[in-house]
Amino acid sequence: MTTVEQHVITEAADRLAAAARTGSPCAPVRDLIGREDVESAYRIQSRNIETLLASGRTVVGRKIGLTSPAVQKQLGVDQPDFGVLLDDFDVTAAADVDIAQLLQPRIEAEVAFVLSGDIDDTISAEQAPSFVDRVFASFEIVDSRIAGWDISLADTVADNASSGLFVLGESIACTDSPDLAEITMTMTADGEEVSSGTGSDCLGSPWEALVWLANTSLSYGSPLRAGEVILSGALGPMVAVTAGSTYAATISGIGDVSATFTA
Image (cartoon, rainbow, N blue to C red; front, side):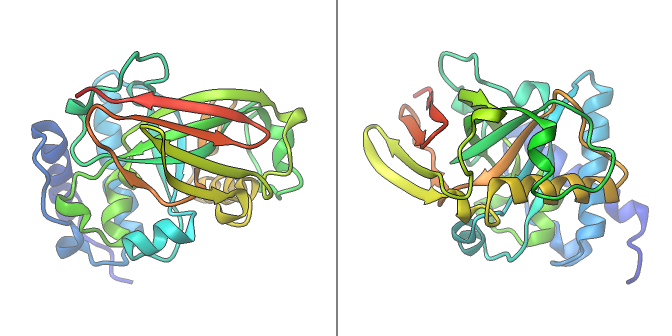
């Protein structure tokens, strides 16, 4: 594969950063790097994350994206990806989520993990629970800096896996967690069901999603660390956010999560 020159990476990163800064979605970056050039896309992602860290933000975890077949179908992609969670992505404590800070938000109900230890070697699904402290019902509020969500795999990877915000809901100790492949999820918007799914819809199990992330992160030289929040990926179809609406989800055996958006 031909290595994309650094000035192209910079141009793509600057395009996405400008969209985030101005609130005006941009054209896809696949015109610069190619639809399937994941290696270059992660270089773009890393460049923008480094810029945000230099401004004083901190890493609090990672997110796994595109784990659900329903979401893959919605976006026209066929494999998972990952992004970085920064401290100001966490709106768990907010009374209402400020929709003005988002461009084109959609919401997904997910399992989230808080890690109890560093993952410095490759792991299996059987080993994964030993690295987890608590298991949460959560919302990921995904967003895209690319106009109309017109994304290829490379576009979403470059755009920090279409990260936006997240909300952590009720939780249980990892030792008390049910079989995560068997859990069910139901999400409502203002009381009306809008999405549903199961743990097996997330790469077969959220544990498998965590394994994929841990091992993939190692391959990129960025191992997962104790205390990090890991969003395991959607359990069902994502839903476009409506201003002023309240979203609630129940994940069996784990608990509930809710979020209200400003009008």
